[in-house]
Image (cartoon, rainbow, N blue to C red):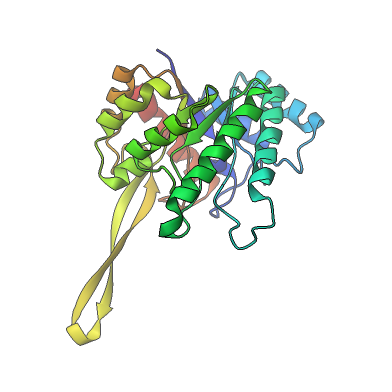
Length: 296
């Protein structure tokens, strides 16, 4: 059983005000920090299907080979339930074409996986229709990825199929040999699930997991007429692995007992304790890699 520590480029994409690195600089950064592999974000400012050329892909691949870093995964950003207010626009077709372009880039880079999401919820009465739309779209994405020799991985991020038992049911319904799980502990931890149990159940069908850790920060609104505070939904803030709410030991115990072998990606994909300076990103990534190595 092999688990490979991987750094996700979204961590250095500047999307939450943090430091931004281009692809070559990011790969060199990952190598300097000690990560064996990288996952590349399939959108601006990183691996955009509009901006990336064969020449730039070759430069990225050369940088990875020079640094001894594997390019593991290209991360797609999909929402197959989007676009209901403009039914005449072929949103699903455009996204499948996007996934095909990512798969072509993955093939040129030597990456093994393209990551996708399902879809965000629309109206409650439309849940079954949303489910069916996502199943059909992801099945088609699995087929176009297969044409390029790349595995399609579904991450449990968007609303359709996000609960872990429902996620397993969703993958069963897709029922495509080139569609695999990229199950992460973030959502089930926030749901209050047993991370050992769900990791062990899903480990046999996984190709990657992606980790981030968070602390819960309580929120209240003052109500003057009651001279009291009304509780609000908690805010979560990203912290180094092991400093937050995730029971990572239980999750990795479940992965090991379930026989998981694949990539373990770390991401800083939201506001981070300590801010977004490159120094803080580096410090947090190093601490998280130390934690990862212990878990693996």
